[in-house]
Amino acid sequence: MYEAFFGLKENPFTLSPDPRYLYLSPQHREALNCLIYGIHEKKGFMVITGGIGTGKTTLCRSLLASLDDSVATALIFNPTLSDLELLKTINQEFGVRMGRGRGTKKRYLDALNAFLVQNFATGKNAVLLIDEAQNLPHGVMEQIRMLSNLETVREKLIQIILLGQPELLRLLALPSLRQLNERITVRYDLKPLAREDVQHYVEHRIATAGGRTEAIFVPGSCGRIYRASRGIPRRINAICDRALLVAYGKDLRTVDRRIVRTAIRDIGPGYLTDAGPGRTNRIVFGIMVAALMAAVLLLAGYGYLAGGFKWPRL
Image 1 (tube, rainbow, N blue to C red):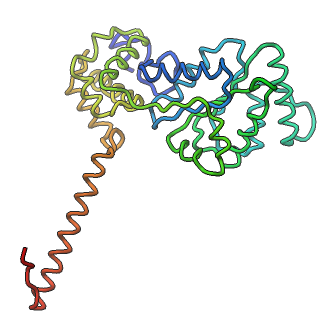
Image 2 (image 1 turned 60 degrees about the vertical axis):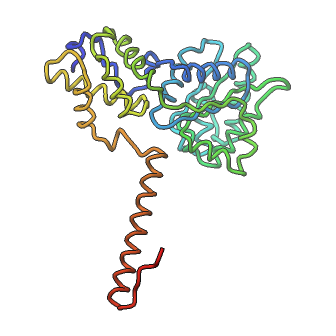
Image 3 (image 1 turned 135 degrees about the vertical axis):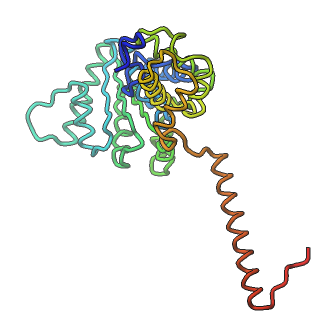
């Protein structure tokens, strides 16, 4: 809607995980390098975790775009599957032909193993990526562990990457999944962007959309965006998209702190901010103090009415 007004070829702040728009902050670059290393060295299991909107899915799509034809890939983005459905979907993603017959777990595993052996014989690698892995049922997790047994004497036939929210770490820490957890050799936890990275992130997306990075968001506006978004890319996108729309509506070709403030107000603070650990502790402490004072006053009032209450001597 506002793209032509700001000299952009497309909307730079959509929420779709377009790998072209991945901003390689130091930590995102490190996470991507960890995955590439794990794939080429055939490490088996890898895990990438991060909060909602920190860029895991975009990182995943960027990784897929960077791999050449020597790597067969399968992407599972709907992990709420049974173990049999998972095997069927993996085979479909790899292009494994099953032939006629009943689709049993053994037939799917045998077909997948045959494909991986043939893939290995031609000098190729295979990578399975599962997004939103924190939603995987326990039984499916065990099935994924069994997939890691598909190997030669020296190397893994398939590299498995799990991407998910921090709940994934708690899931993997369960005693029943200890064998799976111990097989994970590459781990990385994505954090929100640092304050200095937010401006670079915004400029990167505008440049990718064909715009002039110094012409739209004026100095100071990105600081306000950082405070409201807490460095989470998805929230940054929501604020910037709304800010450009507000500026467009006011016939303004630049976005300053006032426009950003309006955009934040329009979106609503409930979407953008949540209570961090420090603020949460202060809130809980305040509630406890208020409850204690209320109890003291209640007891004092009761004692006064009963005629026997006296304030303690300190």
